[in-house]
Length: 190
Image 1 (cartoon, rainbow, N blue to C red):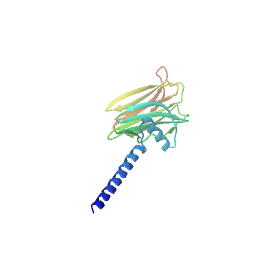
Image 2 (cartoon, one colour):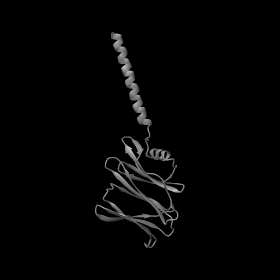
Image 3 (cartoon, rainbow, N blue to C red):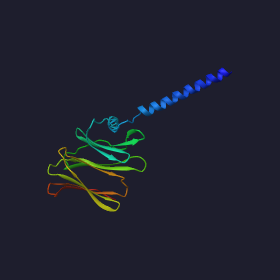
Image 4 (tube, one colour):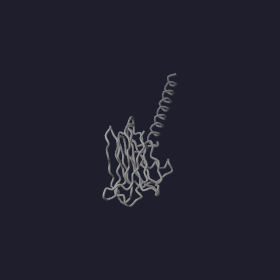
């Protein structure tokens, strides 16, 4: 009988080790990655998109936002760090560039962990006279403004960490070298 108890104890330990191995294997080889760029590339594969040329990486609370271009599409994909691995955040789909618009722009809000949100406004400038993109927004009851100097790739990205529902976008403007407004888009706020 003593031998029977030992055999059952050995079987229990073998089953426990197998279950623990499965859990560790699943965690290490699951969808996440040990690098932020690996999680970004995995995110693109799941959307059947890319691989994008990374134009800018923005550090935010709980992760990073990868701003990239793929053919005639652009994306701003949030990547979230949890414990030791990186995972794709919510949002981050590719958006087609509308070349008929002076500025082709998009906005998205993504959750990044508990009670943390990232709001991203990004796009492509199609009018060669636009040298700077200006974004006006209301944050904590104050009107603020951000500028983005346009480089040769004609892309821009604005990223808000800790975005709150009461914060509002006011307008997106394209300015020429002299500061004259060439393009203006007013956001509808309710």
